[in-house]
Amino acid sequence: MIEVQHLYKSFEDKEVLKDISITFEDGKTNLIIGQSGSGKTVLMKNLVGLLEPTKGQVLYDGRDFVGLSKHEKVLMRREMGMIFQSAALFDSLTVLENVMFPLDMFSSMTLRERQRRAMDCLSRVNLVGAEGKFPGEISGGMQKRVAIARAIALNPKYLFCDEPNSGLDPKTSLVIDDLLHSITREFKMTTIINTHDMNSVMGIGENILFIYEGRKEWQGVSSEIMGSTNKRLTDFIFASDLLKEMRQAVTTARQ
Image 1: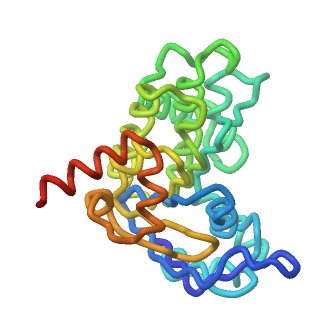
Image 2: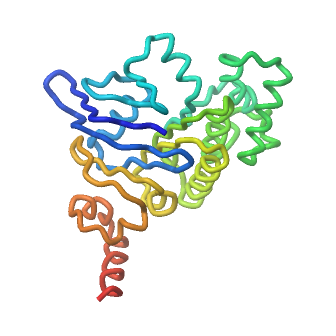
């Protein structure tokens, strides 16, 4: 569990995050949504230690990450997995070598053990048979699955995903969503996903944080969104004509 308590972040005289408090729950897909520039990425960077909060706490199972020493933060990051928007695979390494990379860096396993663990992770994302290929030889969706396999190689307690469906077609995006959701449940991880993908919000949004201009505007689950009376949330969610029609249908059905 990750608890954010009264978090603020400023850059010089610009306050980007303003008094955000929220709990991200174990075994659930926790989504952060909001317009571009709302503070989603800044919040995630504060969570993983790429930025230092101006004020407030980030607690990992009761441990204050902000107050840890540099060495303690390094140890803590070994409990974190990260999936980047671009997959961020190493072009010169094979799929297997990419998944092995964090094991090579941070584990004390033998080579055979690292290879076995990497293959187990590739099996989990249905990529057995692709281990000898290079990133440039596989599709974008497969690259994202390799990134997921690499992120779970060290069996993290916390998984962070920055726009994991960016650049993917709708069908492949659903595959990635289902995979992230099932892995979260299977390993009982605290998974936090930054996303603009409304299919993800409606499909796997078990705990959703909506940020508006750096503030926590709304929190809830996907089933509550359609009936929300928060105008800023509904303006964001129902920006497309299709979703507006869906909302109208729900409203009509309730009358």
